[in-house]
Amino acid sequence: MASKSGWSWLRVAALAATLSLAFGSVAWCQSWGPYDADDHYRPGEAREHGYRNGFRDGLRAGQYDADHGRHFNFKNDDWEDSRGFEHWMGSKGDYKSAYRVGFERGYSRGYGYDYDRYHDRDHSR
Image 1 (spheres, rainbow, N blue to C red):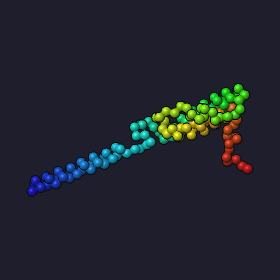
Image 2: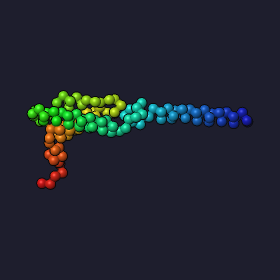
Image 3: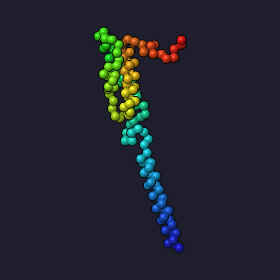
Image 4: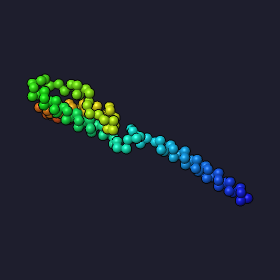
């Protein structure tokens, strides 16, 4: 009889080990973010860097165009290329869209326009 209960415990232990390995493997493969191997990625980081880089580049381009008597035109090669993206930042699409918004606002400020004054959507009529 001792042998019968010994086999029962062995089967229960084997079943527990199998279930533990199966569910542990599923948890190990679980993706908690856009990039599994990237421990330093924060959601929104691509947008933050994109906007900041775009604003800086746009500010320079707007100042240059204003100083050299060029027409107001923020849609240039820099705006199109969205320079400065690095893979660790996250989504390239998020970076590019934020870069373009930042570039337009920086360009407007550098050129001498007050972006918020001319693009206020909540103004009273």
